[in-house]
Amino acid sequence: MTDTAKPATHDLVVSRDLPALIEEAWKSWTEPGHVLRWWGPNGFTCTLAELDVRVGGSSLVCMSAPQWGFPAMYSTWAYTLVDAPHRLEFVHNIADEHGTTIDPATIGAPGIPRDVRHVITFESVGDGATRLTVTELGYTDEEQLALSRQGLEESLDKLVAIYA
Image 1 (cartoon, helix red, strand yellow):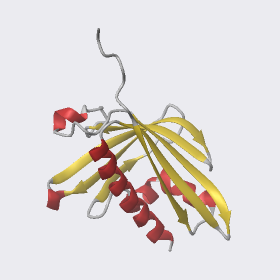
Image 2 (cartoon, helix red, strand yellow; image 1 turned 30 degrees about the vertical axis):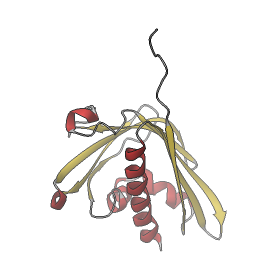
Image 3 (cartoon, rainbow, N blue to C red; image 1 turned 180 degrees about the horizontal axis):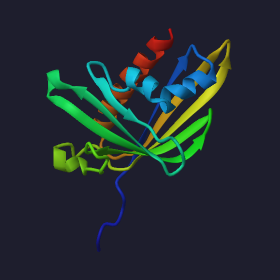
Image 4 (tube, helix red, strand yellow; image 1 turned 180 degrees about the vertical axis):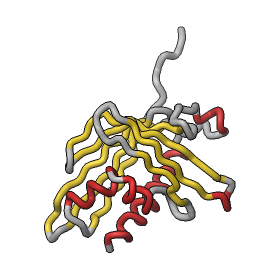
């Protein structure tokens, strides 16, 4: 008998209240100049944000922390839903500088899943503020889940600081 059971998956959900109107909060994920200012955890700089935010479009982003041996870490965001200014859905993958998906295991990161589905929601919460919620679905490695949570939390803290 073969074991055909899929490994257990874990989802990551992080929210922040941004002191910004929903339309401004939306731009933080959909306009290159905004993404360049906050994408990446502490110590990382976003060096590239080529965005094609439409269903079927794909964005290429790069973050860098050369001081830690990360000269360039590319990712793609392949959009499956764009409902401005309320909801974005995309599939995130590690990629090369041309946007070609790379199997994370081949770069020494087997705990990073391929095809991480992301759901980003924007909700007006009054007084010119927007609740941003990021959900990342399908982690199978709890250590990678914890690292991803830390990176996302730090990135979103940088985003909040821009509007504060």
